[in-house]
Image (cartoon, rainbow, N blue to C red):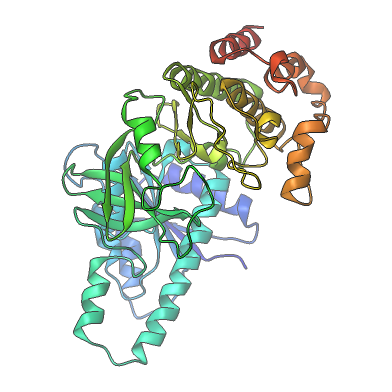
Length: 426
């Protein structure tokens, strides 16, 4: 179904640009484009509900105030309670947190916006809005009480309570943890708050210590004060649940960027930045072991940062931390030696980098399978698909990064970076 979206903003050219994006996503869409004050008047009128969501264009001030968000304040208090997606120019993580606190359903930097990201934000906001209306309808049929009202004011109903942090919205979750956009009281800034999920049964991972799932991740990153790795601000344990307060990345991750095509020059640029980050982590004696697009975060200046060192391993460790039947990492990006449960070194991360580069160049992963085991076996014995004819110049580079035998692979991260630099210069 085509969503009914209204575009509000003071810049007619930007409103038209957004209108074009919406019509490329939903050809039947005919979004209105109006001034914010005009929209506020329409929404406060007695007219029936005419829209499903609002795209609000703002120009933010990166200072300490909320300049640029006046229109968000103007539109958030109306009787229709439409989700508002903020498209921000000249904003930063502080304006992102302010916009969310003021009621925005999503915050998207204007410079990084494309049709795919816009579509994802609209669909997510509409889904959340429908769920809120359904919950509200059920709650109106129930007796209300002071406890329910207090919980509503405190934050999202499914948000855990953590002293020193205000949880605003969930960014993602897995069986192991949930990640929240939060406000740190001590730091007075936005953070990504990773909170462990309580487990009813003990872990089968021999490297796991009950109640300390994130301890190894914190230890791996805490000593690395480098832009190549996510910055961790705090680590602790509350009510039996661990938490990590980390740098928040409003630009998202490489997986989101891969939702639309990447030019070969841009793919090489990303790969060079990832290789440079591996140079830093490997020099510190750490192999990541789970290098994949969701663990590569993007900053507004184009730099990248590696995250999720929960299964990272010291390069000088002679122990194999993978038990029989327990493989850690993503099957799509595992090196052959990781699939086989061998002791790993930095060349395993280099193989994963090659898989990521293949995906960036072609738009799809090199190996697929009906089961995880079938997929992993292809890393060990399958033949990597050839690149399309227009990309054959990158075949020698991928051969160095993704060689099945690690002795035929780039010997270390600096060698991989040099190969990427040479391919860029060619």
